[in-house]
Length: 342
Image 1 (cartoon, one colour):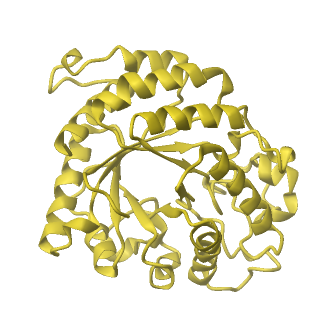
Image 2: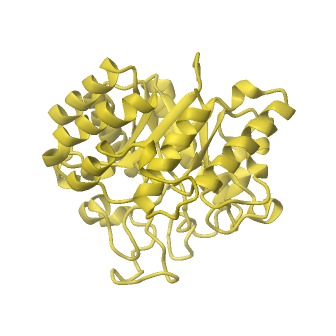
């Protein structure tokens, strides 16, 4: 990853044809003035696929993607699509559009569709199914071409359903081997075949017990061992949304040879702490180039109202110590982090 200035990145889920105009306004009126230079647009299956229309789960068209991409290019923003791979193929027992169209790809077909946490968090596709990669690669290719992008984020966070005892292909296999296979399969297509840079979330590569993380920020099943079996030029985005006494995974990724971009959410004090600690660890290791910036994530539901609300916010809207609603504090966090990275 080559950058001449700090990475100031923003993430959001978006897949609505009807909201493209207000989204472009949000980019120009909010992200550009804040100095955002990387935009991670999580479209997942909300894209209108032409190669496999049966998995279309939203309304974002190829023309929409071209228009959004043009706005970003005009404003020197690197737009990077995010498509959840392996895990997050639905919520709870429900299936997303991929698994609805191809239920044979489901790692846990025996789990009821109405199941909830803790029986299941969300479904995964089977990394050993012989046909799943070709479908996914076709979808990736469409998104890459539509957005005319030079990078791609494969997600892969919070993968719990892997090597299920009921899967005829994965039963009894090492979870870290299966996870590494999935990562390397994506890498082979994206980096080697398509020549784009690959990004992914880092939580499944964190040893939860060793690092003192919970089951969300780190892995408790052994998947973390895959860290030594995947290419080092994958850019890792290590998310931590709560303030912690330490974030040892930042230094661990750097020592392993990865470029690491820490990711925060809306809590301002936690975001500031993560940024400063990440900078400290990179400097201590004399590898400041391996921690080029930060990502501010957003997990709220974006619609015309929320986009417009952001457009009309200003830093002077809030007092520094004021307790805010999530969306308001997200704006405050975005404002603070981007200023600290200029």
